[in-house]
Length: 127
Image 1 (cartoon, rainbow, N blue to C red):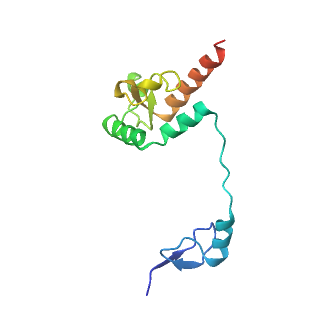
Image 2: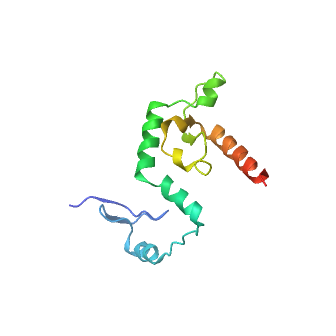
Image 3: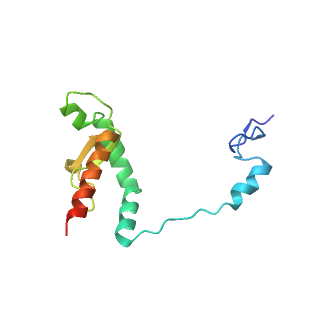
């Protein structure tokens, strides 16, 4: 007897073979879905490609393994797990340092979002 599992469609309890994702009822629905892609300007496209590149994923994963604590929290005397690898100098501002480990820091989501918000405000204020 082949192993079975539930259909991946939310709430469906139909059993399907283990190597399939959806029951016959939902397979048609998911095959017909059209996925819309957002259009990017050329600069944003380059950024998106970089953040999805194998080189960045490898570097950021290794960096987080070696630096598991948020540096900003640590400066405040708190030990909190780092969630994000952040560029000290943003990639938009200095493309050449995108894979430079000396330009990276480990941050928690709270500190990363605050830094990103501040950088965005600075960029908008420039004439």
